[in-house]
Length: 277
Image (cartoon, rainbow, N blue to C red):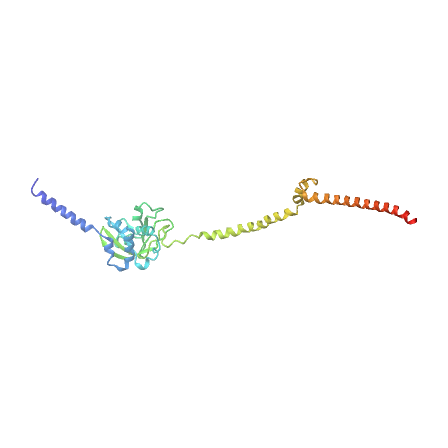
């Protein structure tokens, strides 16, 4: 090995480190000097999208000013992350490159497509430049429109990172950019069914009350126990006792009267002849 080989290797290694340091970027630091993008920058940090941007070698970030971020507020953190990921293009596009499209539309791949969660072309953007008009952006998902336009360049490190301001948040199909409407509350369904079900129960209640009232009117139920009991049974002291006592007293009274009358007749027959002497 020549004595010059070691210094040469060290030199190339130092140049490699310098080039790597020069290529490195930090999206948070790039946006920090711009107060108009504090909301967008904070969302990048909170959702972790900033770290994913910084890990790329070539990237384009479409940022939106604070005044046009209202469409994202109120969304869940997961939804915000998906929306911001669509605003990160996995290639380098500065303003000059976009303006040279010359009336043709290109489809660009975004960070959201790389996540594997995109459906129905949600992870792609359509970009077009027609005539002297502005460069327009829109979701490639079916039914989407070119609903955002290029405003200006914020920062550019050629072929590494390009930060471009666009007019507003790009609407991405089923990834809603407005707070979802709350579902219909459950209690509204129960009141409609409970009144309909309650009247039959109220109507049936009197019918059950009438059945006990009808039973006393049936004589068979009241007389059945007395009909089965014999009239002369000794087990019924109320019916048999008074009748037998009355008959005995009547016979004794009749016999006494008859005897008294007989004695009076004999006495009279004997006394009458004596009066004639």
